[in-house]
Amino acid sequence: MRLYHSVDIGALHLDGNLFLAPIAGYSDMAFRSLCIEYGASLCTTEMVSAEALVRGNKKTELLMRRAPNEKVYCVQIFGGNAQTMAEAAKIVLEKTDCNCIDINGGCPVPKITKTGAGSVLTKEPERLYSIVKAVKESSIKYTSLHPERGNIPVTIKIRSGWDSSNITWKECADAALKAEADAITIHARTKAQGYSGKADWEIQKQLVDFVAKKIPVFGSGDAFSPETARLMLEQTGVDAVMFARGAMGDPFLFKRTKQFLLEGEYETETPKERLEAGLRELKMNVAEHGEKAACMLMRKKFCAYSSGIKGGARLREQIVNSVSIKDYEELFKQFL
Image (cartoon, rainbow, N blue to C red; front, side):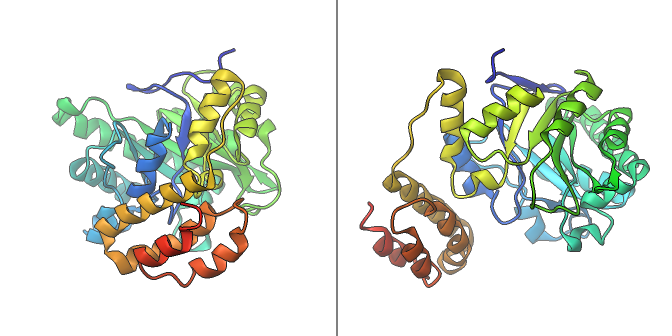
């Protein structure tokens, strides 16, 4: 079985099966650009509030922009009301040239779930159905009026359930299928687990069997390396791996994993290459947000970029005090 292969999401054809998940505070335009450069097949934006889009929030709209080197990309929206989500989907299609809309049915953060969005949808498969159906119909209606856009697929990302007593992935998958979703991503942890414990890959395998190739299934959770990505593909049969925390500060993960899946081995980048990539991301963010804001934003990201580098702990102590490009370049000059 060939582990690295193309994937079709509805009418959208992708050359590979290594994806970047929507990660709040990380999967911005600059970072997605690097991930695409190093081999990601599809990247998804940070999650975008449907309510904020409908209210006309300009800051929210900025989250949806395509990186210059993204041939295709996906916008993820979250919300708890089907009508609002349908309106937001229309706005996404009007304001962007995205190739796919993803629905957030998995975020466990209380400020999201208390609005009726994210992983709370796993408790209410009927509402999940109504939201997917509404967004799908909105996409079909828009593209029927704009045939040059082609068909824009609608996907959903879910968790295995709310808690250990409410494992509802099957009901959610059934609802998504009936609503004509074009793909399902599952993070095989419950909402109660958050990011603790282990992802239950057996649930991923069961979902693949349940869906029975009607639509693609993508796996997320505990894919932190080329080795774990290969294991996920081999053990569960998912069509693609969606990297989340594993890719933070490591856009090279896509390059290493692709090489590993195709050749059985991979080369590891040097500290110089990692920090240079981080500086490139910083400079892209400076162009977008200004130097002060970008340098603040990159503090947590450079902490991730410096992970595994000899002397990294000392670096991270100094990173949190950096306020300019010059500060970062001075800090990293011993590696560059």
